[in-house]
Image (cartoon, rainbow, N blue to C red; front, side, top):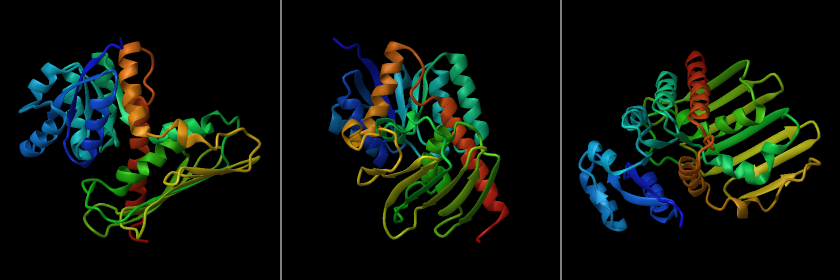
Length: 305
């Protein structure tokens, strides 16, 4: 029989609902319950899954071994920090934190507490299933578009931290090193934070051009990677790809990664139970935060262009 971990969820909002479903279904999860500052929302979610709505974090910590945090981005650092201080393993939805200092502090605290800290960058499982991480060449260029209509969610941070951060994580893995230069422009339309950002990252081996918007007319999630030997294009929405390189990438990648969020949750639990390195470590989550922070700083230097 698979050993089961007592799990809990912090955050009963729209994205928390996705994680609640995963925690209720994962074979290694014994889902104990949920905490949210909105008690009615926590009660509603708990009722749907037959678990407990916790009135405070201390009671949640006492009842669990591993937690998922799916709350507004600016609350991630404090909630994850409290979880780590209680020596609970924690998966933090993207971004790991809303500032680089907080992200680094969280990574250090998790190391000292000897607990697993995993970041919610589940798009990695898509590129892994495709085989893109095994390509023996570094890209010459990467172009990504991650856009969607306004929903009102994620407004406590810029679109860089809200949407683009997925692609920043992927670009960091594909290039394997830090950019030597970052240029960016951003525009705020619905609040104080940037709603549309275009960033140009220059790496030793090539360049990346990333576009993100949460005020676009329609949803787009695409990435084009150009190598010396050809080009790979991925559509994350239709789950399709094209490949002109000689590398044996898998056009059936969608069948291998039908549920990237669920894969991330199961990988998190497996790491706790089996040991080894986290599939998406806190360090890599902090690296994506570093890029996002640098891009927003670059936007501030060239406002509204």
